[in-house]
View 1 (cartoon, rainbow, N blue to C red):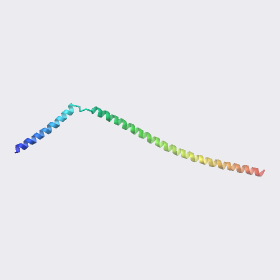
View 2: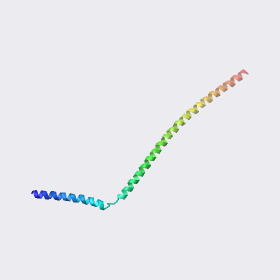
View 3: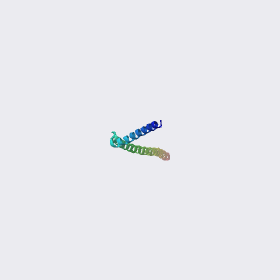
View 4: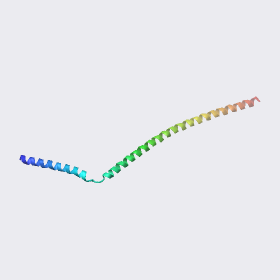
Length: 105
């Protein structure tokens, strides 16, 4: 009985060892196919990732420039409104002076 259990254990251990050794040998000896494709795919993915990162940075930069330009536009519009008010004030003063001059004559 002990001899049968020992033989069964030995056979299982031997099969496991042969399977492991055989796989290692096959991996070293045989290319299973697609290894070069995987390398190319990984390289292409890295290139695409770098390109995407670059595009995201450019989008962020353009977005910041757009915000800055919008702020400048807003300030310029405010300045225009101020100048219009100043112009109206000057026109009113001129009209008042012309009216005063006319009434003095």
